[in-house]
Image (cartoon, rainbow, N blue to C red):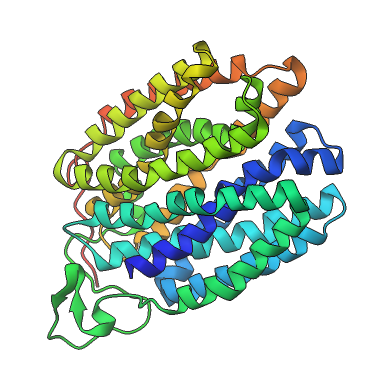
Length: 406
């Protein structure tokens, strides 16, 4: 289950998440766009993701992660094939936002986390971190190759190649998983299960399962939402503008693409180490410390010279790899039964950050020809996010008891 989900995420990580930064400058030049306009593609996709997340969460809880992973892979594959043929900004925006974004969000991000939450309990953060490794591994292994294709053949050929890869490789990966351990006679963490197997997408109910309404009445969920809005606002903008920011700092465009691949490579051990620590330490502590170190990295990028750029890379990695820890926290606190739906609701709230962050960063560049103000603001956001994570209750605290099931 972990290998299938991580492999699917590796395609998305290398060709979609990190890939957007590779497409950023060629797409901007080809269509004659401002950087704010190009950033709007990314931000609108996150806005659509916010709208679609509760729906995809419901579908995952209703039909299971596997069906949604299959459908998402098809949508992403077809979307990138159409993206390669797009000749106007409006068509690019519609294809990327409606097809690629919905397929990626539901089939790659939401369904794989629900799969990990269904299959693991004692090592939930490590399991989710292991699936998150796929994004970093894909960025390290596939993004440099994507950059080479873009530089030598253009972004349109690269986009068509991405679409074919999702259809040829993504679909078999999605089809190999099973929705729950109960469906194959097991319990979470691979324990034997002698009760009748549960079919479909449903996990066996437990005494710790919360309804979505009960979870949304807790203090913990709203602290998590606010801290993550600040985190992803900065992280998404830094990821989208990664290559342009490093070029502004004096790094060549091909070297900046290599740095992007190096960042992804560092995420491979980063996901595993952070997941391992989060299963043993306090998850709020891990989240807070990681954001504090992320803020330190932004400060180095802002005030340091070109020779110190590499110190920013592991800091950005830390800001990324704690995302599975937040979902492990949700699973630990609120259970399995309505995890995907609750994750979708939380995602829709958090997505205000990546909707605003990248566009604002692009607008600042268009008006000032500098990223100084952008980095200063994100430095403050990361510090505040770290402080908010500090007051996050430990799993099981700061929440009412879940209502009795009928």
